[in-house]
Structures are given as C-alpha cells and as structure tokens.
Image (tube, rainbow, N blue to C red; front, side, top):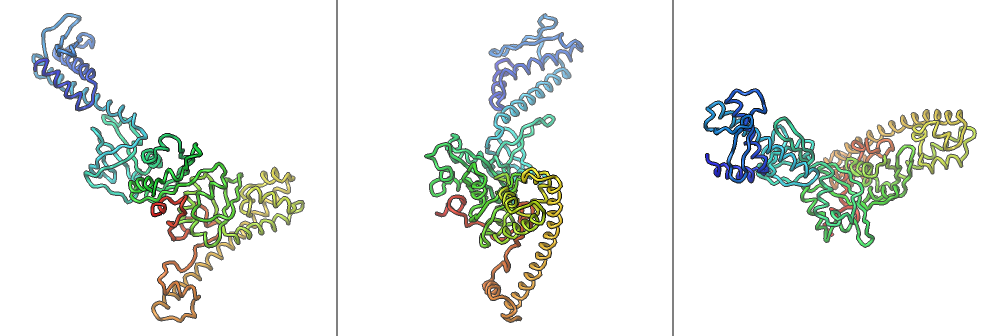
Length: 474
C-alpha cells in the first residue's frame, strides 16, 4: 500500500466514523511500533519510535534514534498480524471515545432514532452511528415500536460498559415532557415561561405547573397554543397521554386548588407540622377531585409537595366536632385554643395524635402534663373513630352489593321495583356502570390509598384553564 492510498483510507475512516484524523495517524504510529517490537523481540518499550507525515503519508521508523528502512509488509506474518490487530483495536477505542463524548454533550436532550428490535423487553434504538437502549422502566406503558419506526426520546445516561458505550434513553422520564415543551413552546425555551413543577404517571396523565416572568404573556395560553396546536403536538407524541397545564402560584392554598381542577374546591386547610393539606369539596365534586383511580389527587400531591386529603363538608365538620369534644374534656383547654389548632390545620383527632404532645405544648403554651394528656385522649379517640369508619365502610359495601344484586334482578325481570331505591333502579335500567358513589371516608382518600377507593369516573371534563386536552376541542 502506497502512502497516498493510506492517506485516502484514513480520511475516509475519519469522515465515516467521525474520528479526528490526528488520532488515526497516532494509532498507525503506535501500531507500527508494536509490530517492530514484535519483529525484533524487543523488551524496552522506548526502543522504537515512529512518526508519520500527515500530508504525504510517509512513515519513518527509528530504533534508538536511528532510522530503519522497513515497513509492515517486511515484518513477517506474525508482526504484520500484530500491526493489524493493534491498529483495529485502537481505531475501535477512538470510535468508542468519540461516541461517548458526543452523547455526553447531548445528555438531557431530545434525539430521534430508529427502532431496531426488542431484547428482553428492552428496546434497541439506532441513533447516528451508535446503538442505544431503552429499558422497560423508561418506556411508556403499552407503547410498542416496530423495527424501522421513528423513536423520539431523551438521552438519560451515558457510561462505559466494558469495551462499549452504554447509552440509556427514556420516554417515561418527566424531563422528556419538559424538553418537549421547550421544543413546541418557544416561550419555554426562551425562559419567558418557566416550568415550576411537574408530576407524571407515564402513559396516563401529567400535571405541569407553569409561570410567566412577563406579565403580558399568559403562561397557560402560551403552552396550549392557538386552538390547542402546541399542546396537541405534545399529546400526539405521547400517544394521547393527558396533559394538565396548571397555573403556578406561590400560595400553596391557591396552587393546590389549581392542581385539583376541574374540581371546585370550597376550602383548603394547611397543616405545616404534618405537611398535609385538607381539601373540602362538595359531594358532587368528590369523584372529580379524586380522579380515576385516585390519579388526580395523587398527581396534585406530588406537584404541590403536600399530602392531600379530600373531604366532604360533612366529614370535615364531623372531624372538627369530634376533635373539639375530645380536647374540651381536658381542663385548661378552651374553645379559643381549639380554634387555634384548627387554624394551624389540625382538623381531626388523627392530626392531634400524629403531631404529639411536644407540638401541642409549644403551640398552645401548655404544661407538659396537659399536652401529654391531650395526645393520649386523641390516640384513644382516633382508634375508636377508625373502628367506626371500618364498620361504616363494611356496611356501605354490603348495602352496595345488595343493591347491585337487586338491580340486576330487576333488569333480568326477576325482581320488583320496590326492592331498590328509585334512583338506583333508573341507573340500572339506563345501564349505568356504577351503582354507588365512591367511598368517602378520610382515611381512604389519601394519595397513597386512593388507588383502591377512587371513583372509576374519568375526569376528562376539565375546565378551559387546566385541562389542555379539552381546550383542543374549543
């Protein structure tokens, strides 16, 4: 091989593999040194040196500083094979380093690749010259790609894995939606609109709290776009995942109200000691506030950073009444002190039990013995209330099952209308899928437990400000 042909090959490899040409020249020099050492059985690593003219391709090999007039073709089979192996290995190492550096610069950015195949539920995606992986945990549930499909995703992680570079992609990470907003909404990319908080359940629903630093720019309207054009592009990219645009507010009470929309909130009581927000809604707004399988309240809690309890007015008043009766049994506790606790967000004996005597003594300026007595009474009363709530729950479930059975008999013509309530009979005749309202006890509507207790009613009838998906139809 002549020098000019070798230079053309180096240029071709540098261009195709995106490797610096100087690195390839250095690789050839090192391969030449390794071959010479093998040919002469040299032990000293500094015995041979090699330099190559990057323009002409002329290569000079030196031994102890003296030139040697010998090339790879004259080294013999074993030395020539050493030259070849060293050169190929160093080329591969350079390519791996280039890929790693390239993707490290693209960490957290959106890239587009082509789906190749699935390997043990892990999606293999080809991006430029590299193969990347998308673990099952980073895929959107229910989403499948066929070989050759375009895959838009975010570079989540880049690290060495032996002789290869491991590139991890994600479509389920919340930052993927953040980057989509930066692409689709210029105001977000320009930092005129700031995404303050985000909560996501990939494939189902996402809540995004936004605020504008420019009073002339409406954050929600800009994110939605004219006739919903901007948010529609994001929803389409996520295969129909619902996106709620929430207006950010520094007031936690207002933010929680915004996050729970489209439900109409009557009152929000914050307990900073417990990090808990007690939200009061009308009976007809309860299902909407909780959301399908508790999704609305769960995402609202994660978005705002508060543990959110949803109560009806009757439950809220009953909890306060029980707490007041319990506390007023203690000498030295007045209605004024009870009102102070309510103002601090403690609205039930469960809250009193949880905060403990130390907090009570500090907030109400009580003696140690009185605070301990209050906490003890609250603990006893809380157990009684919990037992009663469980009993009421079982009774409701039993009655619900009996009514559903009676409704089915009525539909099949085996029962009489007097067996069930008129409203229930009408619902059964109309084919209603739900014959009873969701359970509404306080302890069953926390974000953690709402999966089992929330209504199956979908919450797609969002208001124009917070439900971006419905704005699409306006």
